[in-house]
Image (cartoon, rainbow, N blue to C red; front, side, top):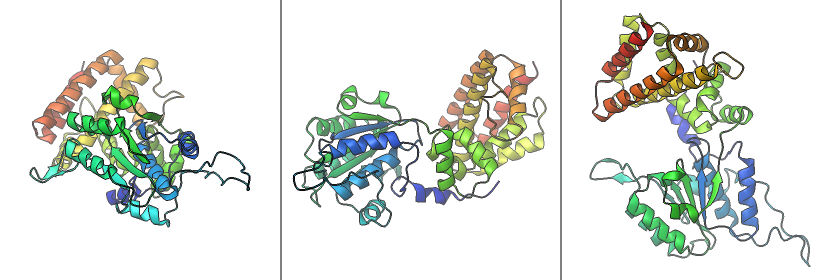
Length: 377
């Protein structure tokens, strides 16, 4: 597999990313709302993780900060000539001064709300707290520094605790003029109904294969064709997920795990222990956490495909060569219903192990012990 440095992903973080793929309809809706001169003050941008929600939010923020309020741009020809041409997209070129200032977090009229650093705990907070939102209230109480829009991006709104959500609600109920809030949400159902009702919703859908290939070709140009095909399956239409998986070696992790699963009920013990040792050496726990996520994803994929009789069929696409054979073999061990029960059991085992910081290698061995009993039935 070709190399990919995790730090490359930072250059394509939403604040720095000039490109948006596969969401032309949503972009057109934002352009039309702006050009009509009656732009809603709050937008709720929803969709799966990694699909481009934050990228869209920063793209729209740059556009608003660069263009300012529209002046009847959809009104047609005037008495003294044609109306200004409507921009065809929200794109702001990287050489534009607004782009550079947004990328460096140096634009006075853009406020970004994320989970903040807890100096006492010496770590990132697990939620957005009320102090973070109060900073928005203070900034929105001032006149725009450059006379145009003031824009606030909350990424992600799902991270707000109750006090923060109630504070944000006050802004939504009494929005200042020329202020726009862009709320990114992976799970809008978790938000207060009163917040959802005061926002215009934009739902971003997973990209189709052509748009995802275009995105990964631009974001991950060093990947070979086989890796790109595998990431297309794993990413499920979310280019941000593809970048994350490429940066953290997701394909290699899943391949290593399924290679061992395919050896059951008698896996190569030396290979299994070596795999467990590798996971244990990652003190951050990120590799094991990603492996657990991918394993649960793969088992869910197995259950769905086995129940529909689609393993190896027209709708089945391999993550890597040999995966189909492993899936077909496991599907013969027991019914999809029993695999669904095992999926829940493995999920509880992984969650419990992470919550009490159990030895990661031992958790891996426990999972293979369960799988070995299933294979031997």
